[in-house]
Image 1: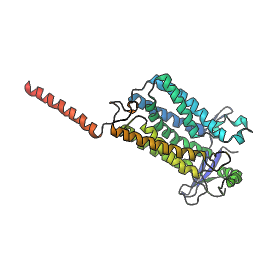
Image 2: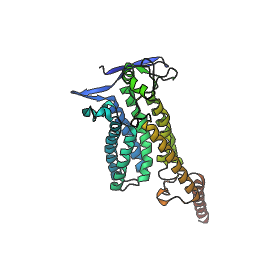
Image 3: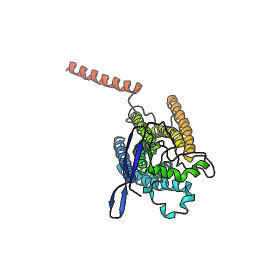
Image 4: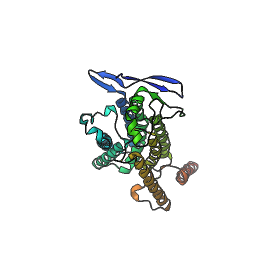
Length: 328
């Protein structure tokens, strides 16, 4: 099979070749999929490191978190996918570690990173709730960029569409749909391999990048309590995943059902996180928010009444300085 796939964007009137392999070292091929995911991961780490320094979080502690979160995140992302596709992988055991061909589940990665973060925080003595907020922002960066790895692999696309502006088609998409048409039909999904499809990777990428800018603004200007950004991340991403997952043709399903795992999990996360956020905001307003969730004075956003208090203190200092000058 060629390393290049011709991709057609019918609605835009353009087409071009997309390579799956960036370069080779001897007989070992370096895939764009891995490079793009690594790039997204690196940007997320750089952002997280900058924020950790600003929040005076231990560098050694963050290193522990990064190490454990990365290792368990990768393992669990792959394990999650393999478990729900075990009918295939039990006959192809040698393919289980071949993540460069695709087949990692973001929710599995989040679960693994969450467990790794708990371990890293215990070892490095890092505030877990602050870390969750940084993690939510980092995930949006990684997901927003990493989804383009799916584009280079020509995977994680949606059902047929003849109206979406960014609809796309390629021979690789044709082959994938032709091979899975019967399986999809059994789940009530009819596809025509000759028609373009929804670029669901693009939908998720744009949503995640937009979410990052929104939550990045909140974390700098409007953050109210520790863990808030992570809850908002779960709500934001979960809403998108419930919709976009319904368009995809490669969803993981609960055994012997037509229930998509990611849609169900997203629904649970959105409802649970929204309830928690409302409860914490009510407690914050009443002054009963648990101490472990309260922001340190230096980390509290200077807005509203606090900003007025800061201005008042500055004005008082200026008046004292003026009085001293007058007296002298």
